Amino acid sequence: MRGWCGEAFSTLVHQSGFCRAWNLRNPPRREILHSAEGLTFKPIARRGPPMHRFDLTTDLTTGNADIDSQHLALFAIANEILFSSELMRSPALFRRAVASLVAHLEYGFASEELAMYQRGYIRRRFHTAFHDHVRSEVQAIVARLDRDGQPGEVRQAIFFMLEDWVTYHVAPADRELAEHLREQAQSGTLPTLPDVGPLRSAGKLAADFDEQLLAL
Ligand SMILES: [Fe+2]
Image 1 (cartoon, rainbow, N blue to C red):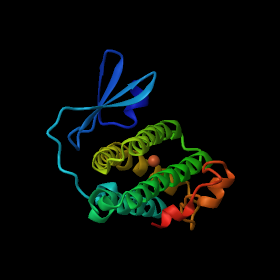
Image 2 (image 1 turned 30 degrees about the vertical axis):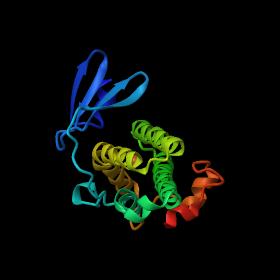
Image 3 (image 1 turned 120 degrees about the vertical axis):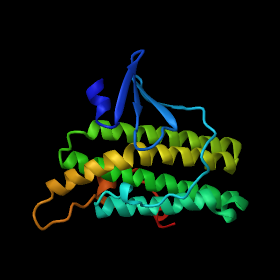
Image 4 (image 1 turned 135 degrees about the vertical axis):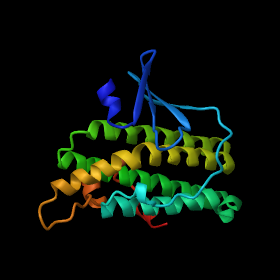
């Protein structure tokens, strides 16, 4: 368990059969538990930092043009969801923006996962496990929006989900993947990720995946 968890996090403390992971560069906002059931995020009691905009800062830049452009587009729609007063006044526009965020995440995860498979990335199981964790969080957020229709709470849930993702996944794991893709690329070629068409053909994106949601 130590080796499996140790690929992702800075410091590990094992207690009661769980792997408790802490990222030393950033104060933890959540305790991450890994057990046989998978990854669990447990909120830590906090006053709570105010929501901030997401930017492609130096520590989040992977150096892979495709991954970075996907993250840039995702941050743009996330910032709209978090801070647009126009979206707060229109439930329909808010739902459309959330659907776009989900599409960006699905597309980004699928393209990384197919690239990891095609390039024989040894850590793809662990990398994909974090994608799956985010997918389950996103599903819960969308279900909550469908059930309650409260954009304020959904905004906060999206903010914390993205904070965990950029802190515990983009900064360490996506940068490692970008380095692997760079090493694997043949001389003179760019380490590109598969686009929507190949992802559909490989079954990594649903046949009815709405590509237009990526253009918002
Ligand atoms: Fe990833």
